[in-house]
Amino acid sequence: MGAVRPASQMRPVELVEEDDDRPGAGGASARDDAPRAGGHGGSGDPLDGTTRAPGRRRWPWLVAALALAVGVAALATGVTERAARERADAFAALPGVVRPLEAAPVERWRTTADGPTPVLGAAGAVVTVARTQGTWAVRSSDPTSGEVRWQVEVVAEAGSGFESVAVACAPGTDPAAVLICLWNEPNVLYGSAGESTPYVPPTHVLALDPDDGATYGTWQIEGRLLGVTRHDDDLVVATGQRDRHVLVERRGSADGDVRWSWTSPGPLVDSGGVRAAPALADGGSVVALVAVSTTVLDVRTGDVLEAGPPGRQILVGGLPDGGYVTWESAVGGTLRDPDGSVRGAVPALPSPVVGDGSVDALLLDAGNRALAVQPTDGAVTWALPTSMTPVAVARGVVVMAGDATVGAVDGVDGRLLWEQRLAAEQRIRPLTDGLHVLTAEPDGADGHELVARGLRDGVEAWRVALPADLQGVAAVSGLVVVRTGTEVIVLR
Image (cartoon, rainbow, N blue to C red; front, top):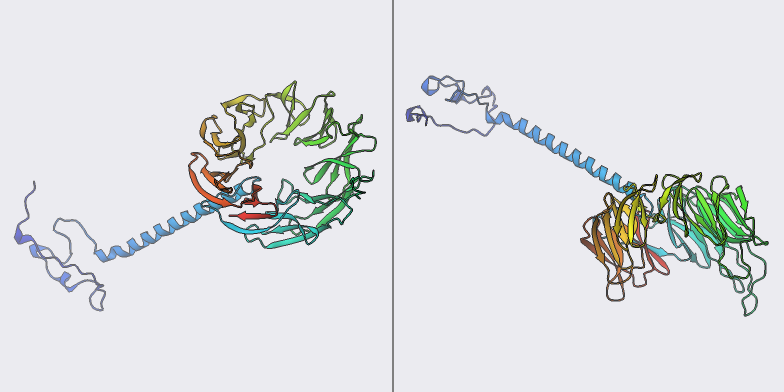
């Protein structure tokens, strides 16, 4: 232990907190000018020989450092919040998903809507189709406030003695794509039997600008309409002809100009109604006319890529990279390039999933198991025994849904993260906001609730009451949209 300093060498110290920069003071206390005890002069050095600046001179530096730290923290927080908003905006722009919900949503607005396509998203807005005072109208509303951006009156309802009219609209995959609406011209009803004339009324097509509702063009489809699919801003239309053959055409949505056409070599329409009517199936880069025999057509040129034998149906589905997949009952599934070249075999068609594409593999429902396969050759990445089906992908997690179950699977290794059995069979497809899995479930009192469970852990986060006459819950322009028989309700 070092020696104790003698008491005779210790001196009193006075702390001066006020500013001594008085005129004539020289910036120091007069006390500092006096000779110090122990032979020290007016230097103010402590007895241990170290140099110590006056305490008041530290304050400007401390304040500046604190201000700099606060500024840097605020800047970092702003950058982080801006990045989070950008990620949320990018996720919400994807079709079929909801903008991330940090808290339970509440009702923002509601409007009337009915018909075959009561609500859809276009140009970042919520578009509704409804009968208003005897007229079918298409209306675009601001997603946040519900303020009407534009409204177009399409066609009046048919009067007595005519078949009913219903308007259906379809947006494109691109938010700025043309909005296309169709309706059948009503036919005349005769007598109590309700029989109509042999005349087949045309189907009318209306192309609208999704930003302001301006009309791009109108035209009509002659013959019995069997199916319509969209490809870019064009329509592929299948119609039954008087000779029972089927005509398939790709036509411009704004003017109806024919890009290509194909007619079935034999009759496919059954006039007696014994067989199902031919249908048009969308396979991304191909379309398939599914009838007593199936023909797969290249959507770009109309060339026949595959023609199945009578009695065998061929189902098709699109692939993210532009290829397509076919499935036949006696053959199974086949991955193909856009020109029809075979890539590999798969046991089933890929499940249609929405989301951010964070899982590169194709997801399949193979009956008693879910599979992830490589889109290049069909090689199996993982397999999970389950009765649930993949429905969405977010942040590397696969959202799964069964008849009365919901769950999540790790998209990398197929590990089951969680599974929840529901109180009743679910009629509405689950949604995701990238943070939760959202399901519409019975509340035990003849009503429904929207239930949010954590995406990776399944822990319940919140519940929101839904209308008693609920018909559906969908993601539209990044919002939760609840549909009843006569209204749509926007939650946020």
